Image 1 (cartoon, rainbow, N blue to C red):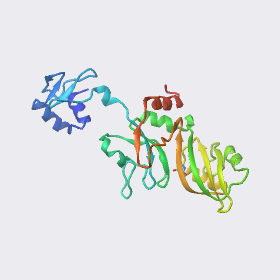
Image 2 (image 1 turned 60 degrees about the vertical axis):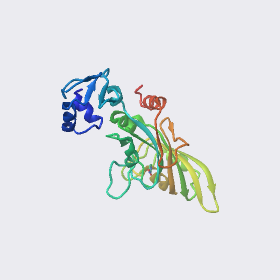
Image 3 (image 1 turned 45 degrees about the horizontal axis):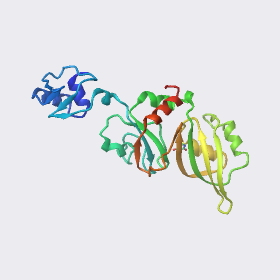
Image 4 (image 1 turned 180 degrees about the vertical axis):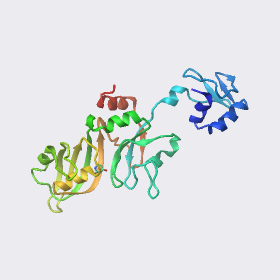
Length: 244
Ligand code: URA
């Protein structure tokens, strides 16, 4: 990689600004001042600006993966004119090119993966890989005894037939006509869980994603908090899409 691209990618400045920084002799490669912006730097090189070492190329090309407990009220987008986005939450990371792996509705909370790995994100969302997502829902209405069977058979909507989904009723409050359920789906359609529950006679009043493939929402994360995925978690995601 060219030295000026390396420095610009690290956020040192625009391509023309870093050329000027290099020209002034402020940049060293392996301890030697380099004034040629086009000089090639490789994984093994140690680059510093004004004596301050920057991470190696390996660090630069490494993908970044985060688990966010999405708070209600934020939109799963890179930018939005009206609402706060989940990507705004990552501002202090100073990383370019972060995006969400799929979307959650504005009022949905819970596990949302955020990364800069387009290839893996594509695999995780691909309908052919059928990665399961589990949601906890509070529902207005009591669900019929055949509700789980109807979801597992697939529901016919105007525009599609849902893939088999799993339903587990956690509790029922007959006085208030409400229940709490877990729903597991393996596709990612718009308002999917809310539409499935509506089709079996309920109305979702609260929705939280608690699992995405092999990953469970970290109970330590409060809404709005996030953490980096561990290497083991990234390996588990890769295994889930057959990309070990
Ligand atoms: N299904 C929904 O209805 N909403 C979400 O945010 C996610 C799944």
